[in-house]
Length: 433
Image (tube, rainbow, N blue to C red):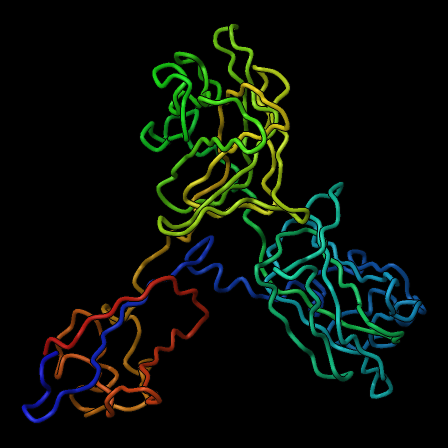
């Protein structure tokens, strides 16, 4: 590093460029945190139901609106909450939404309430006839911390977000407890049009992006022949080995950039009427970045085994719920007994705006000087925080903190983006001066 003056060596000089990732529109996900309508009434009374109510006229489900004081001032289930007791408050959002956080509040009841919900779980469903799914983290069903009094609202992040139409709050307690609650949901509408074919049939995915662990015969049933509804050469991809327990073969597709995968489709080898092979079960694996490990797609029971085909000609489409966000995806044939397998496939979804990697404004000036601060500066007029703009050469040419950096020395350069952003990469540069 160049010397700031002949007599000193500044300990650190950094210039930053921030880049962002936001699903949907580049501004959309960061702002996918709006209230969905419990307090405002955008969620109508008819969309709020419950397993039971202690008294429908005063503490029924419709009184579960946060920061409101109608009726008895909350929803209260009929029974005390205890192990083995299942009560719920349910909201129907009428269409798919992304839920990024939830908020709860006890029964204030104009100062008379004494009941609140100190722990709870969440359940959700996407389709009217679909099953209820319990929200989980890596340790199992997620128990959210609720309230410790009747009046203060407590907001909790839902990370990863839930994509659902209906959601349930399920009070939880280790011992018999009288519970009442008011709630709000935060998020935004889900972009339901993320269901386009991604290019196996059309050719938008090039041959070079389709690879496999092996092929029975590269020239006729190699990976590039795995395009659904096409009949070139042998009419499918067929791995070299029969599929059986402990045999690992895969068909891999590189989408070149991050995509949201919402469904997949498979088809057997028709081969102009000569084919007899298809893939009746399979797993999916995926990865986001080149240098990260492959992840097996799972549901609440473990690795998800998808049902494939029962003949060589009919295509079968399967939902990927929750969706996968990935650049590369593998179809892994599965069988309990030795089976000859061939398949053709398609992926459905949309580009992820995780590809939204635009600079956020250090170089361009979109981030104003007033939003750039620091713990200290060696000399504010020449190497203050505002000079930390990458690829610029004003004054001293960088930000330099007052103190040399060493263990237990804490200095920082801070940027205020004025609104929520998800940061996926950062860039630094030294002081050219």
